[in-house]
Image (cartoon, rainbow, N blue to C red):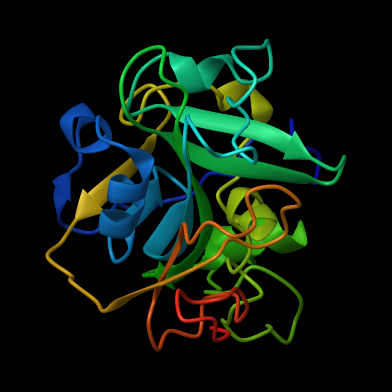
Amino acid sequence: MSPLSPPITVRGRPPRGVMLDREFFGRPSDEVAADLVGKVLWRSGVGGGRLTEVEAYLPEGDAACHAAKGRTRRNTAMFEGPGRLYVFFSYGMHTMLNLVCDQVSVGSAVLVRAFEPLGDSSMLRANRTGRLPRPGASDGGPAVAKPDGPWISCGPGRVAQALAISLDMSGMSLGEESGVVVLDDGCRPEVGRTTRIGISQGESLPLRYYMVGNDYVSHTGRTIGGDRA
C-alpha cells in the first residue's frame, strides 16, 4: 500500500477511556514512552488496539533522533509541540507513526512499534491485505481468513499500514484533526525496557519499552543487564 493511500473506513467506535491530552505528551519522550505502554491507540472509523511496544527518541545525546541535526522540512512536525503526529517514510518502504512529545521547538517523539488489536479488526486486516471485508463477514480478506496475530500490527511499518496512516497526516494533532487518539482505560501492565531496534546510531540507549509477556512485541533488543528481550 502506498504511503499516500487514503484510509479505508468502516463502522466502529473507540473503546472507553480518557483521551490523553497535550499535557501528557508535553514531557520528555522517554517518560512518555514508558507511560504509553498499555494505553489504547485508536483511529476513528478504522480501529486500533493496546500499545505493546514503543521507542523514545531524545532531542539531545541521541544521534538516532531525526531532530538531532536540527529542524528540516521532513521533521518539522517534531518541533511544533506535543500531542501531534510525526509521520515519515523509512527506507523507501514503510510509513512510520510517531507521537510528538516535550515542548514547542524541542524535537522529541515516540515511535509506535506495535499494538494488540481490540474489538473489530476487520479494517486493520483490510488495510494490511488490501482486501475489503466481505458483506456480513468479520474478517478482511480471502475466503479462509488468516487468524488475528502479530502479522496485523507488530512492527512499525505494519502499525501505520493497519491504521492507514499517510504522510500527509504528519503535523496533525491527536483528536478531531487526525482522527487518531490515545486513550487511558486503566490498564497498567508490567513494562520492560531494552535498547532500540534497527538503528545504527544511539543503539546502546535503553529507550525501547514493551509490555512484558505480550506476543505483540519484537523479541529482540538488549536489556539494561545485557540480556535479550
